[in-house]
Length: 379
Figure 1 (cartoon, helix red, strand yellow):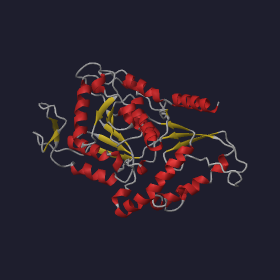
Figure 2: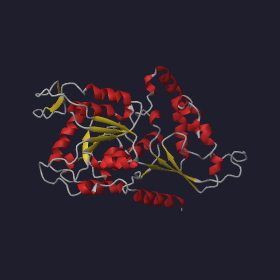
Figure 3: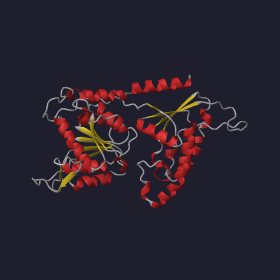
Figure 4: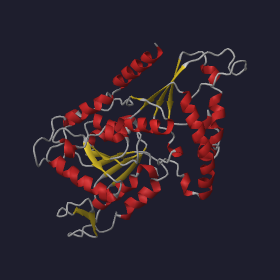
């Protein structure tokens, strides 16, 4: 109900976050009669529901203990220096305020984490954060993806592109993301606009107008083509001011906003590849959804995506599910796109292999692993 309070989510939420424990603390008595509490948490207050037992006090009278298992998506990103969707650091008063409040929030977060009986991490990346910030061990159980909903277009299964020099059957690249600074969608829009590559962007957020400006900047300008300095085998990419043809690029960037699930599946199925540029992602469901549709993913090689996407360059033909780029810059993304084009032409991406890899993250697997973990801890 908190998000329905006027102005809370849009304005008061961040400055008044130190009051949040008072809200969640009221749940303790309601949970007292349960044997097991499973909390899904990425926030400092949505875990550690147990109160320290104090005999003779009204707060614990008549309450019995329960086992709390926390499925942790990440320790709070803004408390520990990770990029977030809220750009509060842009304003100096908020930086000063946060420096004070966040100190106490980290103390509260650490103490809450010590009340949890068992942690489950949604990736090895998050397990390392739990160990670092909470000094707790955790079991890694990857989150579920509906691989029955996200499927390969049957007509594309007959085109596995095993032979060289085969042309792609689909044309556009796809981004599915919240449009906030931490997702680094700006570099994707800039590179695709400069190269004249068709790009469809699904999602909304504060960055939408900025992204549209980047896209329109190249809609009527001479082509800016990128080329790789292959002689030096350098990772740097030269920005050539104009192509030899001096052609004009027509805008090829589409912003689709939020779409229905059925349309999203079709967009996945019919794209050439998905580009995922987020910084230090906890796990990243979008790459797995794309792979479930048999599509390769060009990913920023940071965070949890390293556990789900197999880089095709070292893996070999038919054994990779995408291409890495790092750091998240226009230069490294351009290099990754060039690598992708070469690998695609050589038939490195097999839709059947890519989908089979994504099936490792199915809902059925998730339910089975969670059930097994819970049962093993309450015996």
